[in-house]
Image 1: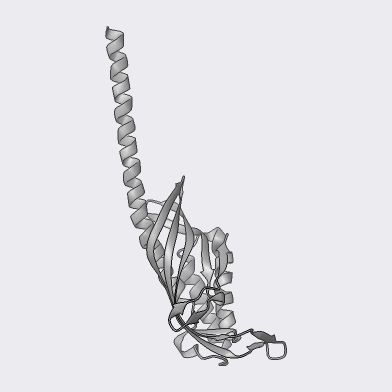
Image 2: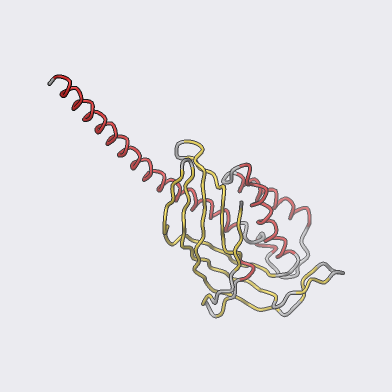
Length: 214
């Protein structure tokens, strides 16, 4: 009887410890959900800021001061690096620069670009990584070249300019690595590239192209 009682006590103890572990795990997951969503919202604010040139330079075909532009890129790299894992910074920062370069050479000109998170469709946990499957709303005001052709002599895009203003709803995936308690960094970002949007009278008409950060 004594041996049976010891066995029961051990089973109860194991179940109690397991229950505490599960409760703590769920509590940690809920904290991570709140923390990562706040982090991604802050990351998107920087994303929005550096989707457009400085306000004084948001003029199609304007000659941009090279020194000032390089300073802007350096500041962008500094601001974004605070959100991205070191091993992933090069690929993401290059894609950001390409978007701005396209505005410099007149492929299109962004006057406004705002990406907001509508909701998180799903949280996906895997060890120290957490992926957020997001529904987003993108508001855009831009001039866009129809069938842009890059002129080799001027190194500028030419073509008919079309005004595009409106909003688009999209889905994208952001994966974060937890590097410390309530501290995260972006390691993967799959997003809809603005270069292929088409807007008419405030209504998104699709034509999207996906960009991926590995």
